[in-house]
Figure 1 (cartoon, rainbow, N blue to C red):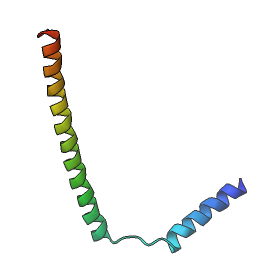
Figure 2 (figure 1 turned 30 degrees about the horizontal axis):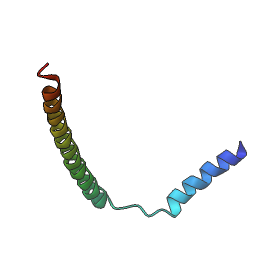
Figure 3 (figure 1 turned 30 degrees about the vertical axis):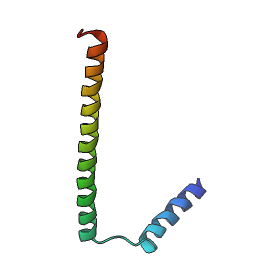
Amino acid sequence: MAGIVNYVKESFEELRSNVTWTSWSEAQRLTIVVAIFSILFSLAIWGVDTAFSKSLGLVYESVLGGN
């Protein structure tokens, strides 16, 4: 148990003294970039999914005879 407590203490000390944190403005800018790319990728995936869905629907319709 003492090992776990020591590990947690050392982890917090590491975070406080050795980690370089980005500035608030840089974090905001990077968050916006990630949000924009996430939206773009989700729209691209939605477009590909829609195209595959419609093309498979046409294939099934031609194979099954319009059922």
